[in-house]
Length: 324
Image (cartoon, rainbow, N blue to C red):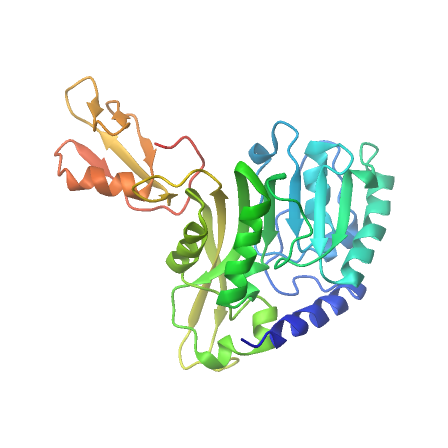
């Protein structure tokens, strides 16, 4: 398979490192508002992402954090806010100019944030397909609007690499565009559009399947929101193509015998007259107390056709506290 599009991607981000381009490929990532955290202006201008990745709740107990595709270093600085330890955050990038720009930005970040030291972040040259990171050494790994650039074989390899470096029960947090509309071949094969995070978007179901096929036993869909339109006036398509951005957390849990637990925001509510309902598979529903359920459990409960159990549709938002 040709990988010329990867070289096109490198060239685009070399230019973006030397001459910041606000919103180059995506809707910019929301900036965390935290006491004592100041994001230098140049970091904000180099904020090339399509959503949020890591949530502060992922950063408890001094985790070792890996971020692939450093941009201007903004997310690395945000992660360091929670770890505050030498080498607690590892940033990987294949573009020398981007690594150098981040180093300069960290000098400014040190000036405006008394708590921050550049040594909190370790920058390494490398790419997502061959991570220069030891096996089972990372608690939280993240990427923002990078994996959608890859074609299928490279995407599988990138996900496999993330799985390799994560500790058992470690978390892979991703933000990427997805698309349920057929993407014409002319757009898929356009190297620049792919590098700009537009034409590589997969249907969400296919994206999740690639993640679980690698071995991740639990997948959480944390957010899903409108993102871009590719229209016939500007792109090689005869109809509107609607693209959404999705925020996903994949957990390196053991794979259940009956398949992965995928949370898409479904909820089960028991409204019967008994003190509780027990499905004898580890799920107990208390009266009128909503329980977030994975799609698998939701389907099993729905199949019972119990007149006093309601299963909601997917909301594409999951914030923890579920059935598994």
